[in-house]
Amino acid sequence: MSARDKLAAPLDVAALRREFPILDLKVNGKPLIFLDNAASSQMPQPVIERWVKYRSAQHANIHRAVHYLSETATAEYEKARHKVQAFINAKESRECIFTSGTTDGINLVAQGYGRKFFKAGDEIILTTLEHHSNIVPWQMLAEEKGVTIRVVPINDRGELLVEDYRKLFNVNTKFVAMTHVSNALGTITPVREMIAIAHEHGVPVLVDGAQAAPHLKVDVQELDCDFYAFSGHKLCGPTGIGVLYGKAALLEKMQPFKGGGDMILSVTFEKTTYAPIPAKFEAGTPPIGEAITLGAAIDYLSAIGIERIAAHETDLLDYATDQLNRVPGVRLIGTAEKKAAVLSFALEGVHPHDVGSLLNDDGVAIRTGHHCAQPVMKRFKVPATSRASFAFYNTMAEVDALVASIGRVQKLFA
Amino acid sequence: MILEHNKKPRNWGMLADATHKAEGVNPLCGDHIHLSLKLNGDQVEAVGFEGEACAICKASASMMTVAVKGKTKTDAEMMVQEFRDMTTGKLDTGGPHHLGRLTVFAGVSELPTRVKCAILPWHTLHAAFAGSDTASTE
Image (cartoon, rainbow over all chains, first blue to last red; front, top):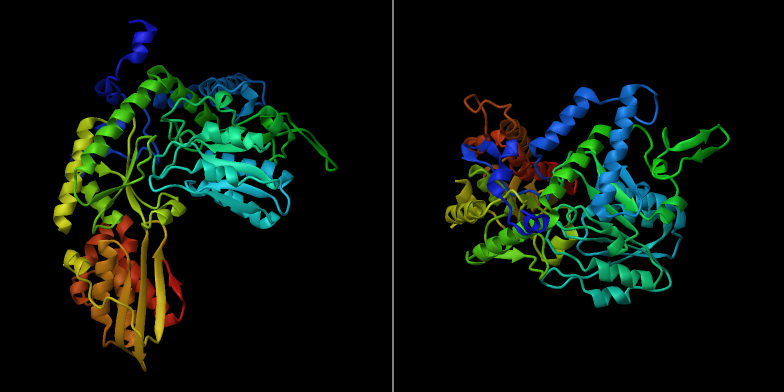
């Protein structure tokens, strides 16, 4: 098969599933149906093995000693950074900073950029779709600095209103922070267009890519974003590791977020000279094994092909949307034209928490609650929703099981 | 019984002449209830609640209002303690207690994520007695 044919071929989901040991699990005597991938996805055997190899034969602290293990760990850690660079098409690997996750990356920019450059009277723009992790760090800073937060509204489908966004800009606008894919609704935002608008005003943009990186091809140069943050554990990698991409020129003029070892050139009690990027932002011993294992997860996903993953997930989403639309009493929350594989819904007369508990009896794992996106819940006037989110290892049969389980919940509450 | 109380909650609605009020919130799961009490001296003369909550929370609140109506504050507080012990597996429902039909909630001790749903109304009752405005079980 040529490379081109391979990319066009549909996924062999049955074969892929065999690589995920956790998918063999029985929950309440039923096969696990894992539909909570937007919260965290599962890890395949080759990625687990990479972690085991690191812990068994490669672990030592990095960037320090001259012995064999330290040199090996350092080389593997930096190799992982190159894998990240290729994955998001960053111009240089030093623009990819290892963080503990998306939240950490956003806080790094709020503190490293915002604290240095924002002043009283400035404005920053966020959107209604943001996860709390892309609201709270900015609010904390805004309160301290006297900065005003402006919010881009959404329509009833859960799509950002770009014309309203355009009107929010004025001479005081200093920053835009926005999501690429909504975790609560699945909306794919017109991020490229919105970045271009911000740049017309000379305003830098941070993109929260936590939900996008596992499902869409991310090209930071093509997007022309100034910062892009994502997490490892939503990419079939480990928790405790994430990436912040930033344009080198911006990262260089920012102040460090955390002080400590490994981020300095020289220290006296009078003055410390900081290390160049990325080390400037990686104080202390980083999650070395986690970074290396994330590199393996990126290899794994890249070998399958993000485009093929996206195609299968779109099929799942279309099928599930169609099936749930046929069930009376189900209201889908978030019906954007461009959506990632997230299905938020409300069941008439049944609180989402009860939906989650009863689905669990059937082995079906979904997320219920406000999804750390209370402004979205408020916009749709619901306290919480039930959310099924798909990964490439999910099947149409699992969608059928979800729909059947929802039917049983409705019968119980009828 | 839980499903029945969820569907037809007793003592639904806030009292116009309440002497004590409190709000209970579980921010992570979205349970949100308001509780109002009318105390006559030390006795719970009337009690009412409303809110947006899951079946376990709503039924627990409904059955709680039935159970504490007419009781003294001291007796009601003792039930708060016993209910909390029962749902966290620390009370033997075979032994002496004052919970009556509320023992249907004993099973939630095996569902760690639902314990806080069942307890929320009771924490809210405790907060109302204590004169504080809000309660949370998270």
